[in-house]
Length: 506
Image 1 (cartoon, helix red, strand yellow):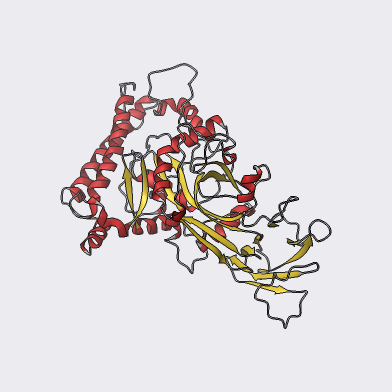
Image 2 (cartoon, rainbow, N blue to C red):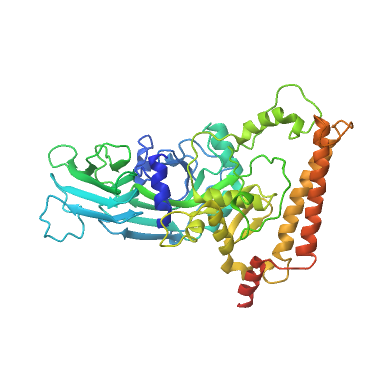
């Protein structure tokens, strides 16, 4: 596992957002952008090295330096009232450490009897700080000068903006810019935590008792009355410290982004047929393998022309697997390493829930809210979804996008006041639509299959025809059985009962 991914995975339970292993802005950014660092409104990606790469900013005009690559088609500049920004100066005090484990810090160049609230001060030539921990895996962020955070209060406007423009964003980034961004990798930033200086470490120690000890030393930059910065004595890639200032940048403050928070945006990949009998599953009573879809893709809504001979078989039919694979490769290949993010798990689940939805948007606050303070790691995917589905409702917006909505808001929803269908009826409609689509696709396919012997022992198309009849019968049976058991009897699911409870208390 890469150092940057180990670092983020271990610090996710601290519920601060996405931890950046490389907080310093990229050197190739325009100077006005480097001076500010990552800001609210940025749309970009977290790279494999653990830094945030901004592509454009929705709050800036099209020709702003922040939009140096241009803007997507149909770009509309968004606006935010300054009163909607929640600013917390020095929310992390100087000398703070954020880690997945207990960390001991000790100043070595000063008498041990002196009580220092901040071991990183005073900073001068010869200063040394020892950092030690006892853990098999350690992710550590040190903030010698503390850190401040800024968060957008009204997030719904950004959520709606992202769902409206998501397809244009991916078309622009993967098409015009040729960035080969993975599906779900685009981030719309709604909050940042920034510092003036930082030190990070991502360590694995599977031998011995897990004791780890590292040292930071003060290094002078420049000449004359130049200032000092903290640097690790180790030169390993698993540690880093900053900032590394250019000449004239010594006075810059709070432009090093240690955490980002925002919306992860995913598109639906090209639909594929189900080759196994689908099942109605309950998120609270099912196995992990029954809940998740492992597909990933690189979306680019602009289709590419297909070459080669044509035939009458549907593109996704069993006997056209070669052409199906070639088609899928245009939109469904994953380019480069894909970094783990809890929001990706939720987005995949949301798209699985509502077949007609084309966009899924999940905010970092949503997965963070279901983590326990005492947890040392993010739960497994199945457990994460179970918690999210218990605390949030799924909301579909015009069949275009869906979002996780706090269940405490349920009394505001028609479905929650007992005037609309039960959640069983809602999911029945979704499942029926999905199964009926598969049946329709197979009906078209079966017209082109040989009418010869169709038994389990048949070969080629006839064998496919035999299994098709079995699958079709199974799907039709599932539809009818689910309707009889849950919908016709108006039997409420646990989620519907919970929503009615909240509504009744209003």
